[in-house]
Length: 275
Ligand SMILES: C[S@@+](CC[C@H](N)C(=O)[O-])C[C@H]1O[C@@H](n2cnc3c(N)ncnc32)[C@H](O)[C@@H]1O
Image (cartoon, rainbow, N blue to C red; front, side, top):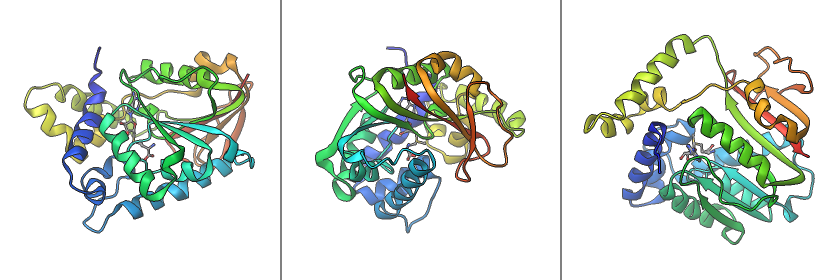
């Protein structure tokens, strides 16, 4: 199986999480790859609390809290160690947590066991970084946050197609992407250098575990709504593009422009119904 270079930091963080003794140590050691917080005082409880806040804020903003969640299946693409997953299992009848890294999925189970509903959780390893091993039409909602920006652009498009494939007709997708901002004039070339360095024997694995270079290198694509909707738009209805209020609207015909204060200036979301 072809391993993409942008898998390196996630596999490195996943392996690091395997060596930690407790879930709190995992958060102190590798939690920064999920919510960018560091410090000796961190623990799993505080980590999950950040996810609890965001799940509800996003689902409300996207009009996805329709009162039926307790009968529905949610698929989360890029669950990590379950920062948001625990909260989703408290809302949905079934949650399938999908991730590139198998060690993260094990930790996700531990997080959900402590702070969510483990009886409602299933995990699914995205071994090739682009295929979801789930049945067509099996999900009511597919949600992905700060994950598709970390994939090779072809994989991000493939996962978007997969999200649409596994969603039942009438179900919803809410997918988060990153697009260009002015700072990318510096960030993008620096990121390319870091990703090249990850391949260098001996040095690469060390760099991959360091916070600053990892943060530079792991944003592996920039995708515009036009590019994503060229791939999945024909399968969607009621397409809303969410952006932060400081960003100009994308002005794409056939879409509704919406803003939400929780969306970072470089981010955007497509929220839509699958036909
Ligand atoms: C920044 S974390 C976000 C995790 C979670 N959504 C959250 O907000 O805490 C990105 C996650 O995406 C996963 N990931 C990266 N590339 C992936 C891919 N190609 N397929 C599936 N998961 C991927 C990483 O392993 C990591 O757990």
